[in-house]
Length: 256
Image 1 (cartoon, rainbow, N blue to C red):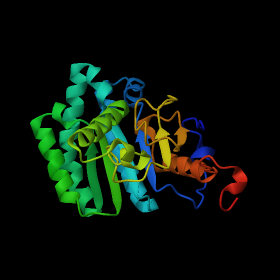
Image 2 (image 1 turned 90 degrees about the vertical axis):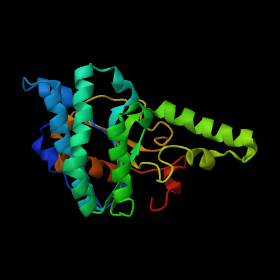
Image 3 (image 1 turned 60 degrees about the vertical axis):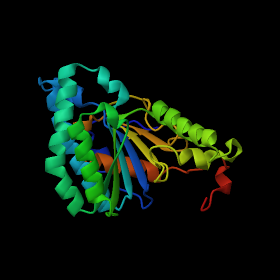
């Protein structure tokens, strides 16, 4: 779990190795601190953070990464000040107008994970429209975690499987890891290979708890609005330098 300080020019120009993750998950942290450091309101940081999202998804397209999952708003974020929550919800709505046409044209498939019922009817409608519009795209799978919590994801999966058992459609003995994973929010994708958290915190904060079991973790002090393609390349280079053993010894890993 590496730590890279913000603004180090020699590090930010680090070369990229050939091995790339197919699925990257990101907690985009530090918007509020970025704004405060500039004497601005936290909401200005969220607007700058949206610009960073655009740069990173385009970079994933250019690098040939197959899937990107971003933590946009957690189930715990509902406890933030009402004004900040309102600004975030408005930003999400604005993003549909500003970004969805470009995403679709670029061949990006967009999906949302999280509890939609707590969102406004307009937001739910735009989410469904975006998913339908981009359903046939395959260059990049972009998952936006919105009102999402990892523990809740696991509980809902357990409830779905319990319901199948109660109806007689499924035997409890048939529930294995593969079946359980198939009931989770990211059931259509392989688990993330690389997890990135910006902003200096060193935790996964209830994000994709099941899916991150064998994911490589990368933490950086860079605040999210400053996390640009060069910073992303540092994370990719760090990932390429690691040996993923999945419980085996180093000598057992192919290519060791």
